[in-house]
Length: 540
Image 1 (cartoon, one colour):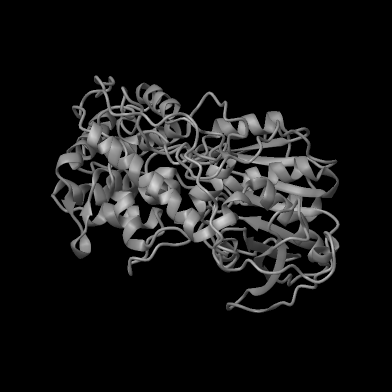
Image 2 (tube, rainbow, N blue to C red; image 1 turned 45 degrees about the vertical axis):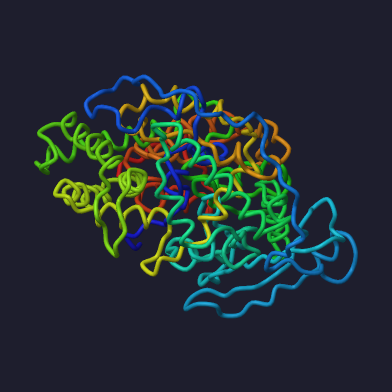
């Protein structure tokens, strides 16, 4: 199999804004913001060697609890259209996908789904799915893939996904509602996103706190102005209904599914909603379904940074003679960026927040990403920010032409529809509580003000997910996973009925693309129905 791992896009809100907690379980995720009288987690210019939270600034006005809801404009987002002929749900289930080549190895088909699943005779939206056809006999059906996010493009994942070992399946994925080639969320322009992502996500004073809150609230209003009613119909529950529609349209009685990162939330919610339609399911890089894990995502990144620092010191990388010295160098650099941004390519600057994004982005790739992080940090230590800025751009899906991928808009829109957060003050308190548990990254993480300041209300809260149908769900967790800490997988395997945990002892986000052992177990389950043994572990 190719050595490149599938790139699940479960991203920190901070790799798309600032260090926060990403899915509604890992993201639905939190993001940056202030609570006055306590601003953000800690001042971002805290002394570089300190691990204690310094005194917090005071008095900036805290927005009142409750989202600043706005009237929904009459704008019609691209892809919203009239429903297919007929009535009720039958007008959708009777569609015949018309497949045609859309890339070198992928066929695509465009179908419709109800904008509002409770009103199937109303407006429709567009979903684009792709497939790589089975090349081995007997054909075992379709295997649906989801890369995570929320907001990751399934079509992008499918284009590079290795089919070796899964040749008996049509590999199928889709751009979920709000994403990519399906009906997309539309927000600010690229220049506005540049300004937003460069803002200080851990404000040091009242002016920075007000600027951050105002920019985030304005971003939400821009998304509403560009997307209209779509923002009210973009929850994971909506996507789960879409997935069941797609399952039926490809002719499968049961869903076979491999989901990564936030894609594990989609899978778990599908299994709970449609247990009778759930077939073989593997969830790699489990999110925190209950938002009550004893470990926060920020701690997962801190843990991964610790592992990098140990490696870096052993390699005599020049950032420090031991782990603690390397971590002190990283913290000192991020602290200094607050007042002294570094020059980057194209006349841009590496700000503190972009520096944080540049540090955490390569941690997704585990040990493969460590040399890139080492080199970028070394360059920054010599006064040049281009390396870390390029890493931040990669994490934020910003191309060299300055254009952003769709996840910059779809990520906050989906997670904030799922999130129940409505209090900036509560977000600030949570951020402050994490600083002692993440002493290097915590002072710069800020609080998640995106969802408390989002202009549409949350979707109805989902109950505890536990049903999985009559086949076990295989949950895969990686011990050094930064974005979805291993503890999340342990919890998910415990909470879902008849789930089986596979432990990957390694680094990086998700395991299927990096561990031959995990791939073998997963493929044996899909191809032959062999359930991994209880306590299964992979060390490669």
